[in-house]
Structures are given as structure tokens and as C-alpha cells.
Length: 122
Length: 108
Image (tube, rainbow over all chains, first blue to last red; front, side, top):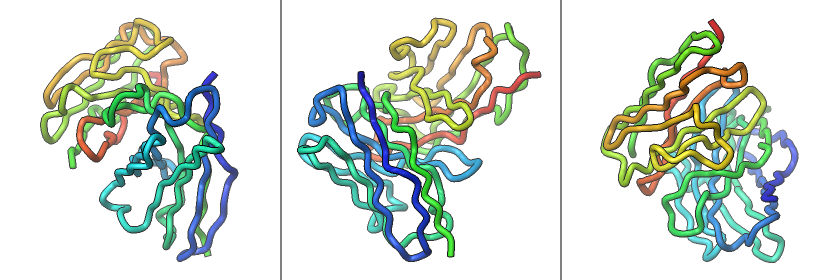
């Protein structure tokens, strides 16, 4: 069965960076894209970006451009999301989600990780 | 960037009632690339509907989606106790995907 297992909770100071991992199993990793979505406490869902596990192509939300980098390691079937210059309003649960289909960019997320809480506090 | 607006913000209904949730886009959603997700407290979102009207695997047929262009609807024909949750729409037809702010369906 498809599983996405994310790394554990992080506490960071303002200005620091965080790197969250998302280890995939149960399918051919390079056949599907992965999105990252975050949710601030008590708030809605915010799409952060997408990465192709096939060729590493990325597409980031405009507001995060320059601060976020998404990568994959195909040898370990793991996706990573790094966010730099952290601010208090980056405090959120961060989710990875695998695309529904394997053809093209225009896919919703069907399998989701359990979420990783990142707290930014001085 | 396509902005999604969901209404109402909160829907208070009783089990067995019909729920109708709306999602409106600031511009036309390409190829009806519109999805609906359900989220319960402390859980990851769950894909219900994609392509505006296709149910994801394992989703009961009381959930249905409709619409095209800029106006989309999620209908829950008869609310079950486990359906009380927050529902989000998402467009994935543009280079930058966006979510709506959500509709909370709570027990009246």
C-alpha cells in the first residue's frame, strides 16, 4: 500500500532553516509528482509547490519563491522541502502529498503524509 | 493566481440532511481541474472528488461534485455522523495550484 512517512516535529528560531522529509513506499517513486501543502494553526490549506520525482522539475507558490526548495532522492524514494529565513508565520503543519495520476502536472493529491509540525519561535 | 471562494463559511445541519457546498473561482478553471477534500481535526486532508465530478477510490456515492468554468458544487446527499468536517476545494489546472478557505459542516 502507498505510504508517505514524514520526519518529526521541529522547533526553529526566526531566521533559521528547516528541511522536512517525506519517505515514500508502495509505488514507483519516479512515476508521480509530490506536492507540499502547509496549514497554520486553526487555518486553511496553503499549496506551497510541486516537484516531479521523475526529473526534479519544480513549481513553487509565488509567495514562497526564493525561500523554498524542493528536492528528491530517488535512491531512497524520499522527497524534501527546505524553507529558509523562517518567520513566526511559517509555524504550521507541513504535508507532502502524492499526485493521483502519473501523467502530467495537472493532478490532485491523493496520498498524504501524516504531517510535520514546524514551530518557529524565539 | 486563481482565487477560490467557498460558501458558506459554516453549514449547520443534522444527520440525514443534504449539504450543498459552493466553490467559485476568480477565473475559469482549466479542464475542470477542481478537487474537493475533507479534513477532520488532527488528520491530513482526504481526496473526495477530482476533475470536478469524479469520486476518488473508496468515496461513498453520497458525495457528488458538479460544475465547470468558475462555479463548482459539492453535494452530500444524506449526512452521516462521520461527514461533519471541513471541506476544501482546490484548483490544479493552473501552474500554481490554490485552495479555497474551506467550509465547515457542523452538527446543528
